[in-house]
Image (cartoon, rainbow, N blue to C red; front, side):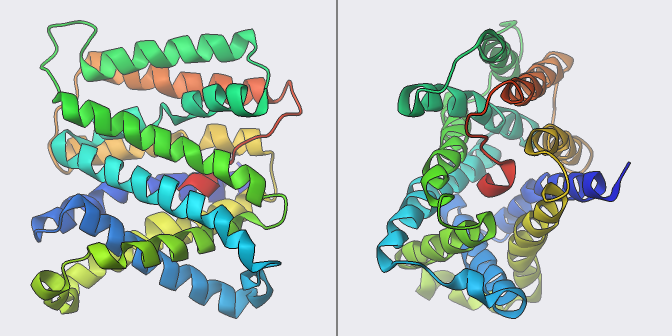
Length: 303
């Protein structure tokens, strides 16, 4: 396995650890929206610091009006996606929340068909069907004897996938002028600024000086966000985007293992089959992209 593949797998595996940080922050009494805020703040600080040292030119915008791109990626996508994802983790389990999140490529395919007139070929239709089957298995609709999952957690899980998918849609326009790391940095900067009014400073600001909370907060912003993105990007520069996206399916595997072995969360064999269906659908969608010249949403931009 070459160096590029190792970097891509490392980045995806780090994304899979997000739930570990989130679960531990919940122990200290933070709500999903507050955890979203902590992730946005820490990620923005780390990414801006990284670019300031490594590539300051990437922090410059061609026009101030281009901020509009990042209002979409930062507010309508990242904040919404993270809130839904963290709420799904709170209300269900890491494996279920992650499996529902990975229906995002199906939403990208559907939205791209209507918004950009991208071809909906037979491979994509098969992938969408497999995704639907996998989702039904994960949430317990098939078979009906699987212990029921709260309906609200299903809605939040699907909401996270839609928000996850919207990043690719919004960033398509920004990619015409800016690099992916510039888009990601400004996305988290805008998200962090938008979230300032929603943090209960009087009640919880004092908690931010606690060493363990700082560890989990900056750990969430560093390893599964800033660092994961950077190493993934380096790997992506040396391989095809479609191959990289297929390799990132290691993320739900890592998240599932953490949920089962660290947090002792239940995940039945039928739900595991559902997750494998969803991962298979992601691979099919990525393989279908090799057969066209249409826009390829990059997984690295979403995380």
